[in-house]
Image 1 (cartoon, rainbow, N blue to C red):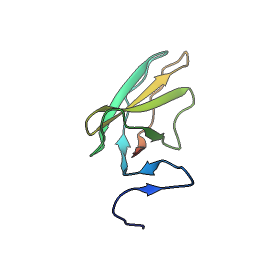
Image 2: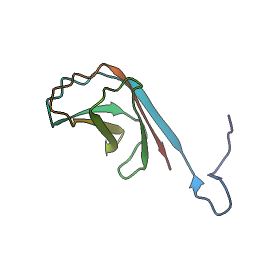
Image 3: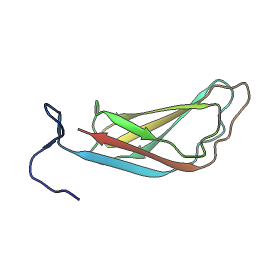
Length: 102
């Protein structure tokens, strides 16, 4: 682990990294009917609107689901899964994670 005061700049002319925030937890989405979406949230302490975010999806995410994540409120990340098939999908419970780097 590297600990320092101030920010860290990677590469020549790179952007200064001031913080890295991560959230991770189990989410159990309900049945998603054909051609529709569901959203669930997770606490991400320190996250703020307009923070850049990267999502991490469960390894066993069902075929036919497309997802996105975003900071939906202070300290909250939202995960949306959309069923793009013509049949209902009941996703298995899984670990969803996200990271903000600012």
